[in-house]
Length: 156
Image (cartoon, rainbow, N blue to C red; front, side, top):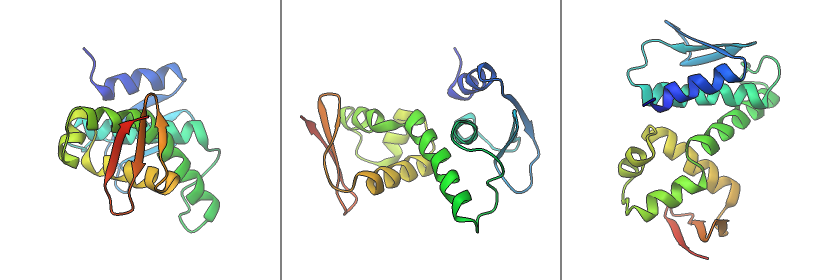
């Protein structure tokens, strides 16, 4: 059975991307043309999967060089790639799944969803910023992001 990183490598290959692990010095991942580089010293496949997913997200949502963090357009495209990866790795359905499973901490939810805790928190922050405190329908559920940090999931 493939783990998530291997599944994402297969996805990348089907998209015409070639994934290599290299000893990168400044980034965990980088995409240039059809070549994706992942830092070889990332300790777990769970973390590598998150990095690879974001790089695939950049491939899907950006064009050109977006490395200049001072450029507002580059920052916007960087966020688009991350948002794409949050939707693929976690999504609102993942938040519902964690609530249904009775997860009471970020650690438990990250373990259940097989994502790094920091990526889960970044995704929740992204969704909270995107949806505010209004209820968002996900299947038969309503997901509400409280400004205090609480996530509520209830039947619609």
